[in-house]
Length: 411
Image (tube, rainbow, N blue to C red; front, side, top):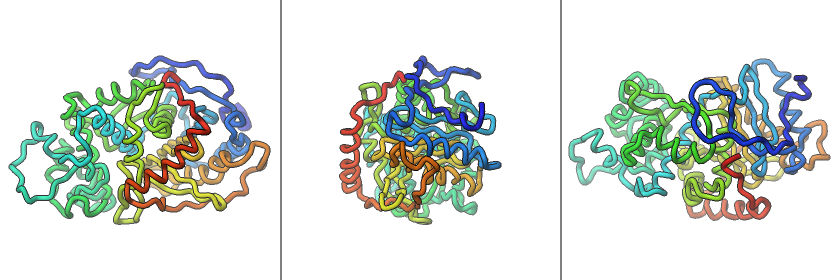
């Protein structure tokens, strides 16, 4: 295929696929209803320009780029030997999937609410001495916002709970639970994978179902995600819900579309809109860099000309991203292979220079590329759930007036 035709700009209302997890290598892939960019008011010239830009760069490290507008797949491109059937390691973008699983468990009554103490859910698997009644309690919300207070900091290799140390142990959950306390729970947000691994074990214990089975039944199956793979630890007995889930980019786009639609899929709720609102709200900011964070989802604003665009996103080492722009009815997925490198952020440049402008520019304009400048800044929404949901609610109502039709789960 020539470079000029390398971007998949599809017009078919694509064939739909079955909804059962598959093992081994397969060419069956997750189905999407597709459209030409102009049919969803996107500038196809800018999308093609994005691909040409990456095609012209050596070692850009981007393995895939997918763009979904108004529930229709309008752009899909792969590099570096990857294709639509390739499972990709999400790294820490897995954490945002874990957030959805916690929300589903709360919706189903498997877990109480985010203010429940976390450790009693693990009493059967990890009996502990009776805690002092005056000791600060770690809640589910503390783990969801990485404010558990234990000596765990993945950004500091000297930290007792650093993920590299955890991964050298056999039982990662026990490793986390036995860490010393450094701060009061809720006091500081410090990036810690161990707490998210522990959340997965909590859901498994509370539901009486291995977390991989719970995810398949409650999330992947209803979304029509056909293939996935989890990393295990503890001799294969437990699942890493803090990283290394492997999905195809089309499946990642379905995760993003589910969040965009506030948990609705195929005319039913997979997870409640209330959970989506709460989990994607700014709940805290990290002590190290003031980055805004929800329940395992990141927030940021892109500023293009004078317009600010709020983005919700999942992020994983190497360039794994699921971006959701509610006001633009847009989901963008990137996967990449620039692990432990600042080049992993190349996707942000493509998003800001080409894809977001393509959703803001009429198709007849900017034929030779965008002249708009994009800059990034932390989301300015206040760190209170009430004000954040109110602000986002106004955006969502406008979006749903423009696009009232949800995407079918069979697509």
